[in-house]
Length: 181
Image (cartoon, rainbow, N blue to C red; front, side, top):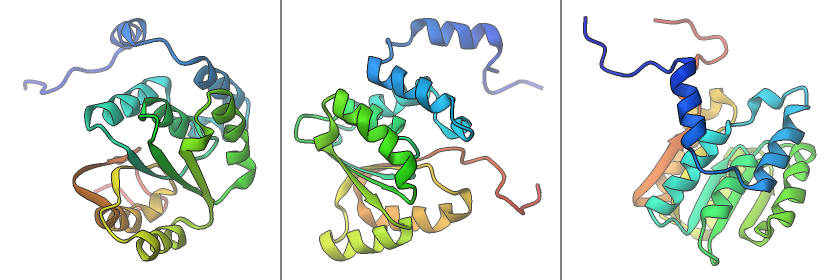
């Protein structure tokens, strides 16, 4: 049987890391700070941050919706790639976690690009539709509780403009309580 993809082994992963751009100093500091937390494994990897920044630049995004912010690494990675007038609406329910990121956003001088909304994501998404209508974002990044992905995706379909991009983290991960088919 012919494999249709290249498996990521240690050698290939080392090559990827050796050839990616350097990590911004505030991203690195935030990643190291988050890694020490009990739930630090929930943070995206630096190469995912690079990918998000690349996607922002590739589609010339100016308006981003982030569903699930944790300590703010992905918001920071995307904010650094935005133009000077770019804007992110970051949704999360944990003020304690997001307050960690806001310090690094300030130090990286992108805090003015990030609007943090602390509330259940579906409430925030409904509020955004009422406040601003549909088609208001160029890109949405969904990285929140996996059981809510269907509803978050449906909201993102309305909130992201035609031709925009919706990216989902851990899409193939099993949901709690689900069984493999």
